[in-house]
Image 1 (cartoon, rainbow, N blue to C red):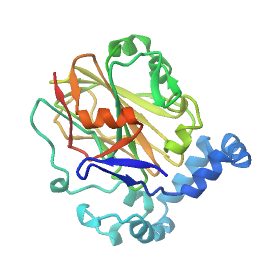
Image 2: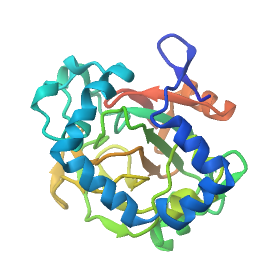
Image 3: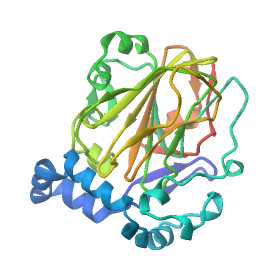
Length: 295
């Protein structure tokens, strides 16, 4: 059971997990772990499943998925019968009126819909994955020079579930560099897996880029793939100005993660998010929602 803090009600919601029984079997049984290491964590499996999700046959699972997870399709640009495949549904676009952007320049916003954890004053050699599990910044991006920019800075982890809106956005006006791609495995990023796989984010396929913002310094964007995520698609134009709230890219099918690193003394994260992170809980947020304030 995964509890998520609800900022509006000040209570905890229970996360309904897509494929929960499957995840528990894979990560908690010896047979499941063996299958994971031999087959499921590899690119081939996610590639094959991605092909299925691109096929017209996969569209048959959309209505039941929407019903099972109570997804409000009124918020999205297309109706159910317009999607020709499950991946088309998965990367659906949202109507902007349902995700207003906190436009004030001094406000830091969430880059997407999901569950957020934030760590301040980070140790570059001991960044928190989950309680008792850590990784180093250099292991994560394989660039010690860039990693050093974030000593004692802030790490923001946004976990996207398969049921979420799966596009991610820019948190400020600015210019984003080219994307650096790092090949890797395809472990799940659900807390069930995070509790079992050390340095998971450093093992999975990931992409990172340096975003030169107008108000928050140099922000490192990192997108992490996961089981059945066939692709991380970057839709922005490198080295061209973007505006706060503009789309940066999207994930194809699967749970995924966006991680942001901010330099020291650039932002003060909202107290409730920090408190919940310290208690071991993620906080539910939406794209454009305020999560912090410029220092």
